[in-house]
Image (cartoon, rainbow, N blue to C red; front, side, top):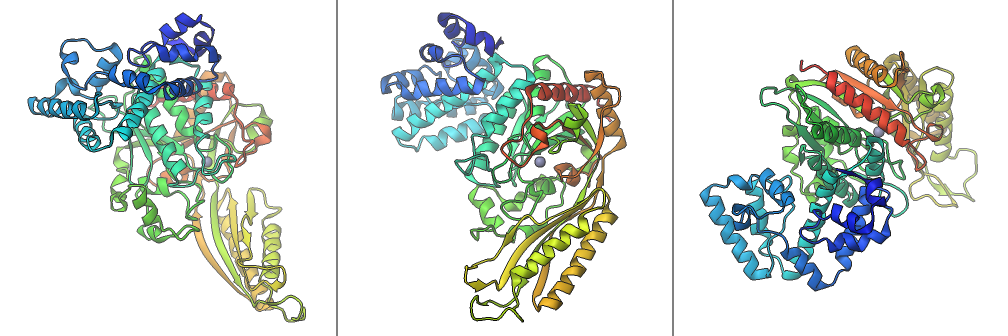
Length: 578
Ligand SMILES: [Zn+2]
């Protein structure tokens, strides 16, 4: 392997030589980007290389495509493959074809070459022989223009996998670079927004899967869109330690919330595998598809499915465009009927550990890069609709108006008053609308959300009950109807004392800090849902910029990402096989 800094500083011919294996027998690609150095990350380097291919003329592109060997073809038999192609084809099992499979592949390869005039190119990582044959059969039906573009895309993916094997980055820098790369995929051009099953969300899943494959995990996207990577260390152990977090985001989000807990384990696994380490258990890395509840006003869709707690009634929920969850799944190519089958068998689980950015200032103020969570606050979220009577803003006298927005204002102040002053208790109205409202119309209807959390379930429930009682008083005095629809009710979740202790020990071994901070989490996390089936632990990583989160200024330093990765690596190495 070679470091990015070395690649950036090598003389141009050595730079091209170092990258000569990335594009099959085509070192001109690297030649063309050498003057664009320095690259900030291997992703910037990859983007520049792919742009050079895009900007090459058609003859050069065809020559590049033709430089690729046929899959499972005679070059393989004669040992004439480049080392990169040989190992990729071996990993896809193409060296072990049955005579029937070999005959089928040769027949399809010949038909393909005859039809398009170049060999079939496929990034085979993540494919087995049957999947390779199926892809070849399917692509044989494409037009030549489509197929040439597809071949170049496959070559770009192959180059990404090869660069991942070639470029050595410090863990922390690599994690930040991956988060930056994912943040480029957004529902909106300004900032990062990644809602469940949008095109950006699906592209994020595909990229996470590629990175898991590059790290050597077996990777798949399940029926709700969770990206699952498995590192099976031995056939003997059926039990798995699970780690992960969510890859969906709020609107205009920070780039580490959730994603850190997926990217950090991927980086650590790649490093451990590279060093030849084997763990005494299977490690499963999960990118949960949905946690924030932005699109369908229902949170934890990904972890609920994996915990076997996915209520089929959720499939009828609709987004703001009237698209049901069931329809959204179908148009993303998912089979809702397959959701029950994605659940973990709790008997196979060794535990769940989640790495998450703190989303608050406690670690920053304590001067500590890492902290161990003691419990996760429970929350109740409700959507409240208030119905009054609309009327003319000029002609209806103030006395006796049934103004839904004025009732909402009173309710918001009641939430603020009831939840203020009790340590650990917080209450928020984050959404407030007058649907169809106009400047000269008394609001006939108002909708708002209420989110109440506390570190103890009884405290939270008491606050919720008294806010609901207060809303009944407001409804009576203002002659409006107030309807509460509870969207979420999750009890406080204590973290496992054993996992807490193991995390503390790992932090101490890595940082030398004898008693790292222990703190409650006020935000909800996938670990809350996973706690229903297995003991959970939650490792917090210091959040910069005063602890701001759910905001583009959310920040994490490469140094803290590095320390977190080292502590997580240590945690994995010491974790017992059960
Ligand atoms: Zn999160």
